[in-house]
Length: 116
Length: 112
Image (cartoon, rainbow over all chains, first blue to last red; front, side):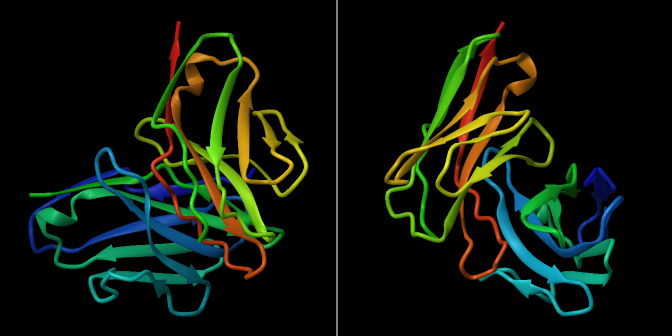
């Protein structure tokens, strides 16, 4: 159990376009979802935390108008990278925690974004 | 958040035990010790966590020092599929926040 699905797994887009990444908890209700970014050969950096039905909490240095997060239901959160530029190229990973085990995060497989 | 220190890399022979160390000398009384691992090109995977007592599960064992300033993740029999970056993370159980802040981790290479 506790499967998190992330889609798409890879996306290539032109500079200036927007890209939406979906994160779904398949077999549990996710009270909280997290979004991370990972550059090559670096560790994961937390971008934001979102709770269902409320606004996301962004980490310092992360532009909320650039990285739009919507957590509309207990099983779905989306991250939209608006007006993407080459420097936004990265590995984006979501995770979710469940009500009964809030201290454990279940991660998606990640989305590799390449902006040309 | 209290920081953790791990070796950058370790090697192990296949089918031998692996002991991955983590130092967390500034750990507070409410900090839980979590371990996650990340296989190449994948999202991280939860391995184990503990507070004071040693913990065992189907994936690994976690040995926590009596003063809690260090811990060791033990893989009892390394396989090639265990090759990954292992992250030791402290999570504050007192605030209720569930954010995880990843350090650089230990890259484990398993030699056939």
